[in-house]
Amino acid sequence: MTKRGGKKRTPAPPPRTAAIPAGAPGRARLIRRVRRGDLEAIIALDTRTTGLSKDSHWRELVERGGRSRRENEFVFLVAVSDDASASLSGFIVGEVRAWEFGSAPCGWVYAMAVEPALREQHVGEHLLAAVATEFRRAGVKKMRTMVAKDNRLPMLFFRGEGMMAGPYIQLEKDLE
Ligand SMILES: CC(C)(COP(=O)(O)OP(=O)(O)OC[C@H]1O[C@@H](n2cnc3c(N)ncnc32)[C@H](O)[C@@H]1OP(=O)(O)O)[C@@H](O)C(=O)NCCC(=O)NCCS
Image 1: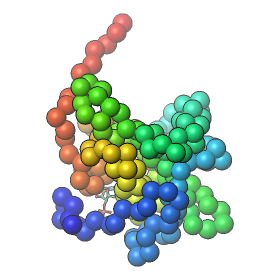
Image 2: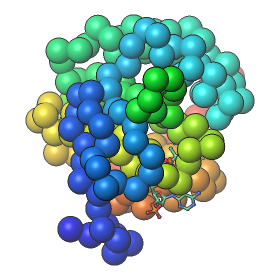
Image 3: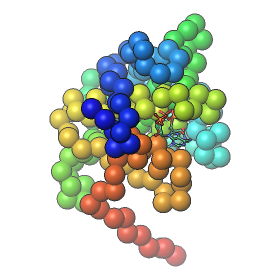
């Protein structure tokens, strides 16, 4: 199977705690469900990535990710190094939402980030593949996200992973 860019797709990793497949590009990492102990590293990575500190937001999502262990609707996965430090390499947050705006159930990717020093080593690709596996298990056949038009990096990433413009447009208005 090839991506839109014509390159070969790396097989999706299993959804639970699992090593990225041997032979996959990049260093060995594990992808697993988020745990409370990941919170500090997630807040630090997000703060460095976005320039905004949102501690209570991440605390709530990490709690939710831990609670929904037996459900597939809300998915919070982390990639950690496969060594004694098990340091955070990246994270992804997604959720299956049904019939919002009249759309059939689909998996939304809300947020993701990879440690800057570890980017372009396929960590993001494996996180996206892992969340897609969770969405498939939840029974949905479509994955969506939203990207700012002028934010080139996520646009390149998601387009590189085969995601294309969908049939909806966002409408907004200032409420002052
Ligand atoms: C977007 C992000 C998560 C990508 O993670 P990553 O681990 O560096 O991405 P990968 O190495 O898995 O790249 C997968 C594909 O995306 C594309 N891509 C990723 N980074 C790219 C870059 N800097 N320039 C061009 N294409 C890029 C490529 O097609 C790449 O495939 P290839 O290496 O085979 O060419 C990471 O850059 C990041 O954390 N950015 C800041 C936060 C952000 O923008 N989050 C997404 C929106 S919430």
